[in-house]
Image (tube, rainbow, N blue to C red; front, side):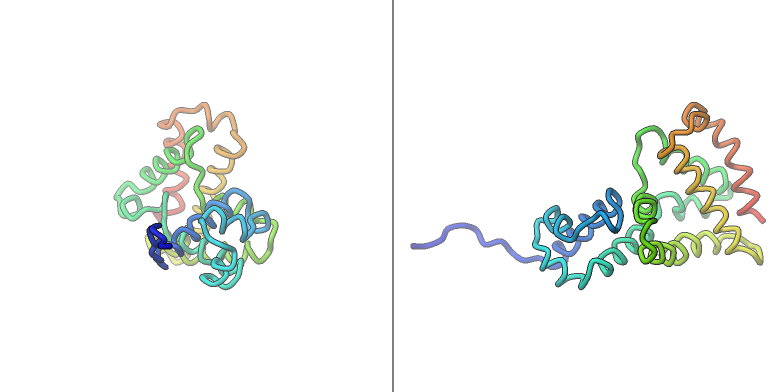
Length: 193
């Protein structure tokens, strides 16, 4: 008897990418402690053993998921940071990305929902410093560029948290132009030294 079923080709890169995407979603939804390797594997269409073969451990998978997420800027984009009106452009992008029930930024959610685990926080901090803080600081012409970038990131994260997660009425009810008018000078004071 012959088996006429098509043979599924193995594609290591596609499998790895599927696992990583599943992990990013799981960690954003449930944090480090709440996301299980079996659930991540199931969503990727593979076994937990295959996840461990590709990544070695849950911590290593988390580290790579965080690194990939933070390396792909959704707010601190090159076009925004290179703009001569970057404080205004940054404010506009932040407002657009946090409008209504819009996209909750994956990196922010991973950090927020993993904040109870000290090791997960350390991994997130390392990636934030490596990607966002360094990227932003490199655009600031000041001796305290790292500090300015860190405070600007705190402002950005705080704005996102209060607007999207808490739903602070003044941030939700204000027009994008009004919010930009308030945010722009605060960002400019930090970034345009």
